[in-house]
Amino acid sequence: MRCFPILVLLFTFHCARSQDTITLSNDSLLKGKVTEISSREIKYKAADNPDGPVYILRRSQVKKITYANGKAEFIIARSERDDIFMNEDMARHSFSFELGGNAGKDITINYDYAFYRTPRYGFVARFGFNPNLFDNEKENALIFPMTASLLVGQNGALEIGAGGVLADYTEYNYGMVYPYSYSEKRVTRFFPTGIFGFRYQQRDGVFLKMAITPLFIMKRINGGTSWISTYDIGERNIYWTGGINIGFAF
Image (cartoon, rainbow, N blue to C red; front, side, top):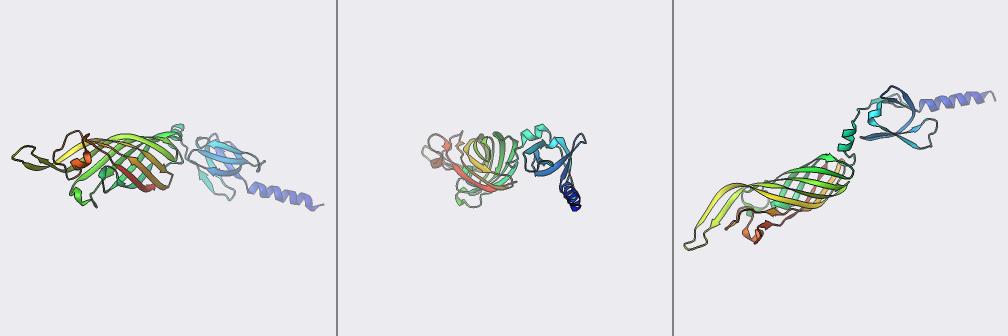
């Protein structure tokens, strides 16, 4: 029976050693076991009830965490505004390769930046460049798509947006009456475009997007271009395209 108090003391000492210490921003201390640290919250279990509920603190409430092994971690406080502007389940940046889209039968390199994101909706800007690597019919056309979109949803999000395409290409013109004339010139024009699609994007993971991207031709082209032919445009001066994006979010 003499050993029992010693065993209780050793057990109590071991439990105390295995606890984490949370230092709050007002310098008060909490004892417990930290179970999760995210970009917005810190979750822990109370020392006197390790099998009980999980408690949640905002990062802005915590100054430091000292773990049971003696290692200390200082917490960089995030403001409530940062919590609203960033959804921890979605990365801000992504690079992707788009097959199709405004580039037609070619590949466009895109960079996306989510400049406003909540768990329910957000806004993202896209900047792209098509170096004309695979579509020989486009000759030396250079295409720079730029769009701003509204996202509705979380990891899998509906995307609706608008923007424009800056294109540098050769334009061909044929005379419509006899004697038929022909001319070509290098031009740089801006075309309005839209986007309607679905994207799947996680933090530090795969980025996928499928979208329809109509291009609106504001000026009728009689002979076509090194980028889009009059056959593709049709009578309504709308170039209907769709693309698939595969990339990496971070």
